[in-house]
Image 1 (cartoon, helix red, strand yellow):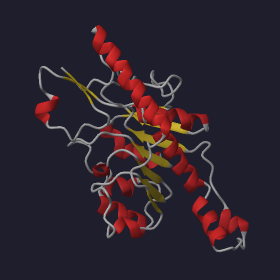
Image 2 (cartoon, rainbow, N blue to C red):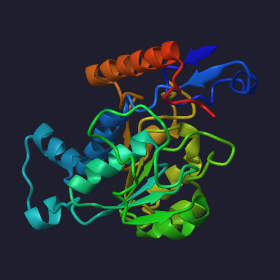
Image 3 (cartoon, one colour):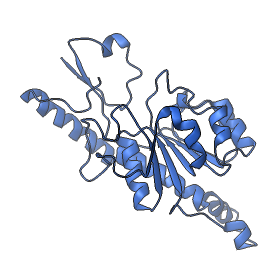
Image 4 (cartoon, one colour):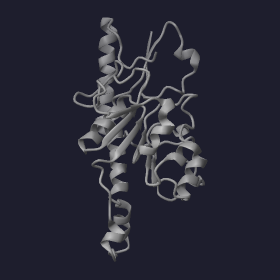
Length: 266
């Protein structure tokens, strides 16, 4: 009667399972939102404050020669972050970014500005859609992307979202924009991304997910400039495991008492 997934995504399930009339299927969304959002903000800070350059200076036991030229950073305050997908992860990214003084632009999902009945850690996220200062629909994404200093992907993989980051979109980005993807690898056209980074069309990218995992050692992504390759580890933490347990316990209680389940796939 009820199947509880441990993952947020469910694109790996056969449609016959998802559409079975006698089964309720729930996902594990919300449990990983905090650590993934922190990973996203961490990657923003890494690029903004040139942590890789700092580490290289230390590694080579050297010092900058001209601090203004070599070490000038940018701040997250007043930067514009575009969040594509405003579920539990997108909303927690928005909350954390707002605390840092960033301007949040977010995409409107099928539930509008509010979150559906999903699991959430108390005090996190943006359940009423109050954080963004600007909203855009998916069909407005190409026009909206040029304003973003950072672009965070938190969409599910569907026929409509595959390769949503493509040559056209990357060509419309600021040449300083940073792309951050903790969602699904097939949201990005890898060839278009490697070209955009190599040609300086965008400022950088941080990827935690890939079309093929583990990412093959001969992947062109490894040799692409201004890219961070993260081995699909953004949610991994004791916090995530504890919250996933809490999500499952909550649904067990709801199932036993006949109440609606959270994270129901509809």
